[in-house]
Length: 454
Image (cartoon, rainbow, N blue to C red; front, top):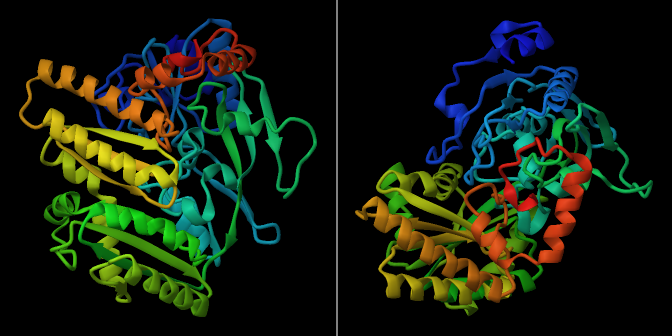
């Protein structure tokens, strides 16, 4: 296999047989797979030739970018080929006339955002991990903190070039704003976690860069009051860019990890907001929300007008998973409930915490109901941890579905979340998904370890 792949690429240095562990796992590093070859592709043509070879020889392929996923989506379970796209990292075009960009999938999110912002443009999707690749963001339909105003990655994908399992190259979508010309096949690949095809080119929608941005921190005496205020904030039509909820317990971990101190330490919870747009409008919207928070019992209203202070506060918000990992192994949970059920769900989380003794800290995107939990292992031995974690996870996902929620808001299903997805999924929906998989990948070679499609 290695010799054949080297011949296909014409560059032996980009075909690896002795594979480093980091290419066999995800960012958590707790799930590890095996593979026969690691291939670094540089072009659509190379991806197509590799996929054609794999198809003809029935070799499994696991596509990956930066490997920052949290649910094992890039962990190869059936050996075969790891197809690394991180070196396909060119920004091919930024078209200011159509507000679009054409890029390769290995472009890193933070690099792309900085590049277009230097041109007065803006790419709004803002998942927590800024070193992820755009291709990976598309494969998981990444959301992030700005979703309440701007939407998720799906809303910014105008077109995709994709290599199918047999090596066929297709393009779905274009720079055009509207498209009613047949099935919108690109939508199938967004959020598919690499199970239907390999993304090799992306046409992305851009918007004008906001003139001004202002962050506001609103402390509350309890989390329930904070979360209940979110509905009033949204109803005020103040168009916040982000609405985050954070418990004090997780803020303390972030403070220790970063050395940053939050204001109003007596608070039990915080709502962190951002407003952006035209400067006068930003200030008006912030004042409108200030009036709302005063009515909902906020302890204070802290406008983060100092850019350094604002950056520090967001630095703490962005480090929570790493801050928890620094003190204990933890299991990250990413689920979503209707926004009016967020408070009820967090109440349930604390109920489970009290009943089981399993520490859980909560934060997330209050504006769209995306709840993030870190379930803390503590000093449990492996057997106890596996048993108790499984029981707690089933309880948490069951409750989310009872409230009308879903298994994942933005991380995907991967390997780690399959039991909970299976348990609550509509069998007819699963069969339809499998039919799509069979049509596009009849030999089931692409990321087939994501087994809900089997």
